Image (cartoon, rainbow, N blue to C red; front, side, top):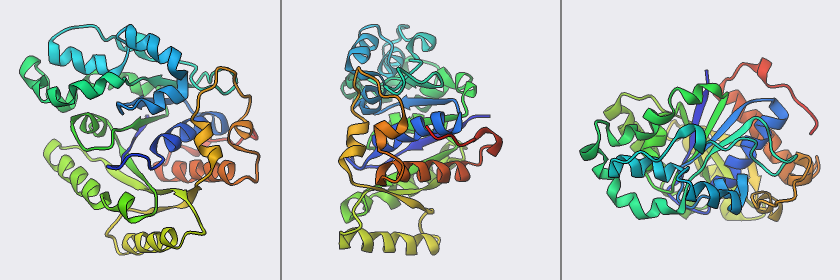
Length: 298
């Protein structure tokens, strides 16, 4: 049984893609899991990070992105085929990871956001069921499915929630980045009530954290206090520090690197250790069978 986790924040630039890509790669390499990334974000950052711009352009021209899935339902056409759209052997690690797959996004998503409400008028399907109808049986082939959602709670994000077991909120620990967290939680609860789903919060992850910044530490103390009082979901113990290595890791290079340590920094470095710890903590909370999570030293 796969576990599906949406990654959500109403604000862009909070490290959502960095966390999505790193979790996917660490889960595959260090824990031998089969992972699918579904990129619903029109910015296509996860897509380009995992397959590069050249491959993305090929998929986009061939109508093999999630934009084309939604466009089919709006225009009553039939271009999107899931089997052709899934990209296998993703990542620039070791020339591509056999167990890391991707359903890519497209920049063209931006142009149809306002038309998505029309889906229900052109097809016998609810607008929130488009993704579910396309991938529900297919995603059972994976241990973990990570959904990189757009920075809003519109219909595209709701499609991601509709197939999710959990959601994660990555955030920079400052006022502007955390301001929308209560709205996310409230909106997901409302979504659950209206749709009969049961998407639960896995937790809040502090990203781009700077231990020397007073504002970051005070914000984390406030969030932790609110979580202890039951006002917020758990705050992950692991903080992802602000570092150029983390940003560099999402930049796809045609020339592959061989190990996680080359890509994220050697063991003992802030970024490598942070993502190692985050992945362990993530697995504890999603409660996969521990027999599938054997450590390696890659």
